[in-house]
Length: 118
Image (cartoon, rainbow, N blue to C red):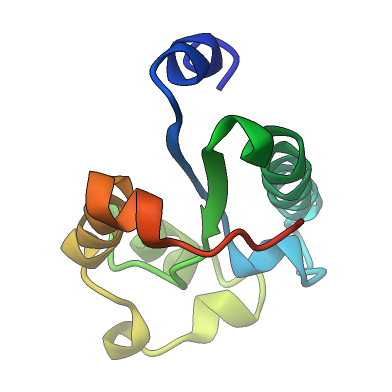
């Protein structure tokens, strides 16, 4: 964001899509570092949106849920917390996240989103 924001301001605005996690809102055993960094990313998104909306820059967070990746298989095998016990069919395919980011990043969507934190 630090590197891109000056260009976005000069360009008349855009949208920043931060990827977050439900772990930002939930304390999960064995994941103190992950939950903490996700909470920080969520708060950064909220504050940046408030600070930047006057420059026509929207900052949104995408918390897409669990995604069927090799990383999720590692989590499953670790048996650390409730996330490890989720049925594999409950995880979304990775391309769904990519499609959501592409939608938000599209010029039409960026300009149609209502400001959230004004």
